[in-house]
Length: 106
Image 1: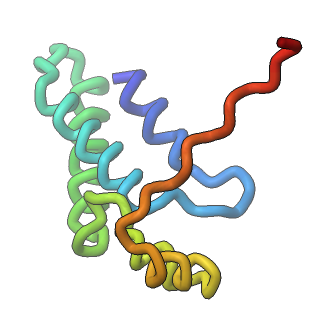
Image 2: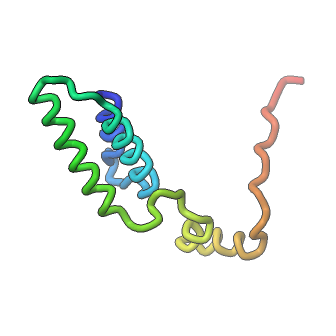
């Protein structure tokens, strides 16, 4: 339970930026799966907390935009940047270059 709440807390923006919808969808989906697998503890307050959290996460999942469960496509990412859009149109099937080898004293 604590691990799921910690993962959900990490979605809160600290610097004013929002988490990507696919990241939210993935984290919420995983938390719901883990909460569904929990057995009742027999403690009314604890079980009530889990049930309330589960309902809130289900509502959040239902409010996420369609397709939020997948990372954005290159086309969606590049739509905001003219430079990236040009690169995508000029070389749509190219993969990014490998990073150069690390500098060594040899």
